[in-house]
Amino acid sequence: MRTKSLKKNKINVVTLGCSKNVYDSEVLMGQLKASGKEVVHEEEGNVVVINTCGFINNAKEESVNTILEFMQKKEAGEVDKVFVTGCLSERYKPDLQKEIPNVDQYFGTTELPQLLKALGADYKHELIGERLTTTPKNYAYLKIAEGCDRPCSFCAIPLMRGKHKSTPIEELVIEAEKLAASGVKELILIAQDLTYYGLDLYKKRNLAELLEALVKVEGIEWIRLHYAFPTGFPMDVLEVMNREEKVCNYIDIPLQHISDHILKSMRRGTTKEKTTKLLQEFRKAVPGMTIRTTLIVGYPGETEEDFQELKQWVQDMRFERLGCFTYSHEENTHAFNLENDVPEEVKQDRANEIMEIQSQISWELNQEKIGKEFKVVIDRKEGNYFVGRTEFDSPDVDNEVLIDASTTYLKTGEFTKVKITDAADFDLYGEVVV
Image: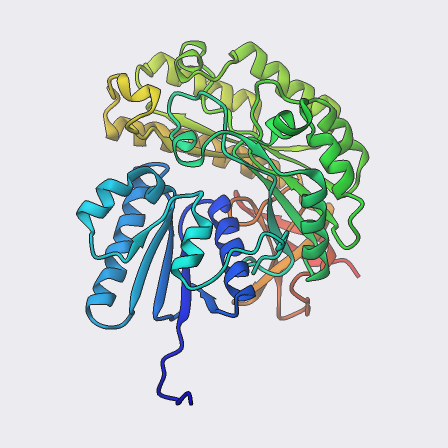
């Protein structure tokens, strides 16, 4: 007979890194729940699974520090077992086993069945779309492919995630329907490269056809595109975006740089002329669309002249959303063979300069929104404000709309019409239109 003194294992999943990792943690949690396990996300639990990131130096440091933190808790008797999975574990498993041997087990990015077995659970193939979402209830990530076939010189993702592998359209529709049934209203499509979607399964770029299928899912109001690649962009996606109200007029397309010789060294397969023409075609095909991009400064061989060219281009293109990273010298990448010749302080100064320019552009573009009305989804209440977003903004990285909570009551996850009354460089202020 069982007694109350028997300790029941509560599994705490800790997620580090990008939205792809968030998705993987949600799938893991869904599988654990289906096996009758008690599972929480970043709360107290006596069994810990750390889903790590291994992309760039800062992310790797955070992952290692998190592992060490939980090892101290294990030694203090606060947790019983610690398992490590994800990209860092995939990339550096032998090193980690040597340096931090008292982790119970390490697993790579493709070893979900083995991880589940170690946690006393069975991998259930039939659980298509069954996830425990960790995002606010109104939006969820939908990972449409895994891995990447691109040869970018600075990127270690193919080492950690393998070759590109698309998920069939019918499986993604099932997953979207289950998310919609649980109250999700916004799907954020993610992959290492959305534009490659379908080449392996359907022998053609099939993102547009996937969007056509997803817009038919009842309950979904917004579909947002993240992480498109500029080379070989399927232009029929823009036609669907322009025609289908549910597809947000928004795209995240990391461009990385604009100097031709840096682009060539990065192995991006494009030029300044082609990239600029592509963006012009975007704006022509979908008037008023928001383009988000990310740039890398301090790449090996980046001269002051290259950087000035990039700065001028950022000013000329007036991106609605932009992030800037300093180059991280990653072993086993093609660029690791190059001399990491831009000093760290120069990298940081360059990143700061780019973001100062972008801050001004963002402020100017936001001023143009004052007096206009937008459909806004409410993500949360924070302090004295309800915090929402327009279709032109992704969670966590883009502008937010702040609405005075003392004058209006709004429900999280609901859509409402808001008139913008004021604007800062990255925040909008508004009032509900009655």
